[in-house]
Image 1 (cartoon, rainbow, N blue to C red):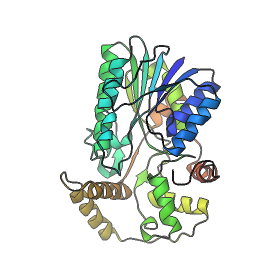
Image 2: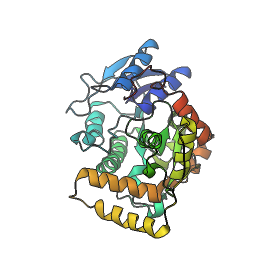
Image 3: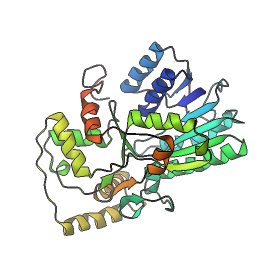
Length: 337
């Protein structure tokens, strides 16, 4: 296998690049513009491994200056994931994917695309099933769903094998600033009541290194061709269980606050109203996140797990490792990145 990885300085891409190298796979790393301090650190780590790199800007009409040719498997992981920020850059997810695939020679090659369970955030009670008709509630979800169709269409048109993985919430050292594990940690350290409410939503999880192994095995398994999979470790802890585990890992005090069922129902109604189109982005995203805290977002990932013969680390152990081994905790990377 000769791998081309977009988003190679990102959370998953960096893990996948190192994993493929350990298995003797040649890697070309596609690096996006304006890397954060954390991404810059990952780039330096890949440079130490002598990984060849090419610039990729999915905002441009021609994302590559010169499209690479010496590859046979594309791992398309680059994505705009900052749901909390209203930005036109979110269109790199769909329009950027379309432009990039238009530059590459795809005939007879392999594409593995990392999508997200957020495309199915309209699942009743948060339980995603394979037959769900997706109606994403955020621009992030909508653009990722559109990208799934773009990848499948381009693959079929050029006779390239494709697989789409709808990944769950990923955790591990180098977790995303502004994401669930960053926000909960900061709130718990302040003993903020929002972090200590007994939020019932169940969240599909996976350690980032387990996700990288799943992606690697998917690319070399013929049965996954022209398939879309829901991915999860099937642990699906409730948000309040996550909060308690994060507090224990950090040594922060944790006292759960019980919220009566009728109040949770009212919160759910309010969250539904505030997600209506036309309202300010900050209200919509806050309401969307509240809905996830209440309903969760999870699935049965066993069809793919069983096919690939995967096993997963216990999520509680993974949460402890995430904070203990984070490069920002040791001062290797600035703490705010």
